[in-house]
Length: 221
Image 1 (cartoon, rainbow, N blue to C red):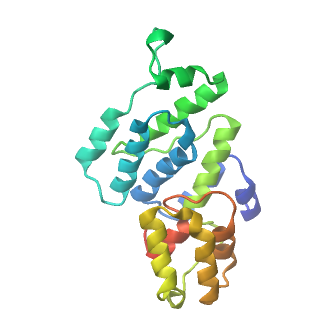
Image 2: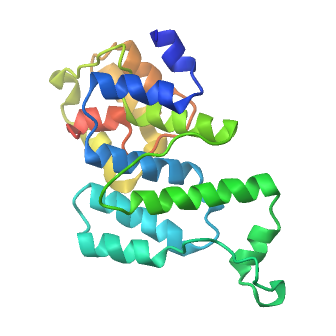
């Protein structure tokens, strides 16, 4: 596979396999990939339980939540959204919203909830595949969290004096990933001309926790 094919691919296996061949992907990164897919599907979580569970998984990935908290979060996530025997008159608001979706949207919601449960286990596995739109989402998340395996990137520590490092820390700590363009500008003023860094910081797609550029600056694997 060439770099051009990797950047354009909509097959998540084609995107992930070269990354795994080139680099060791940490457990932290795998968990954040799962959480990242959930974040992209944020609107599909029709109650706060799943959203809170994703937050626990992210904190666990960074060593800020315990195994007990992870297990508790997993126990709180329903195994399915709705039983066919449920009567609409007695359904929760979540169930009523789910019933109002198209069959395709219902499938995507079920898939999103499956990713939540995957992010909350100890033995991680990143499932890939699904409908074309779901595959594109997976590819986007893989490329957001994993560096281009065809183009090595190194950070010159002279770029990270004061403002750049402080901004990267704030972006990660506060979840202000919409400030990646600003971070790219700060790096550029500090002397960074690396094409991969500048392109990634300015890409229009949303950035999420585990973004390879922020991780590289903060020396997180």
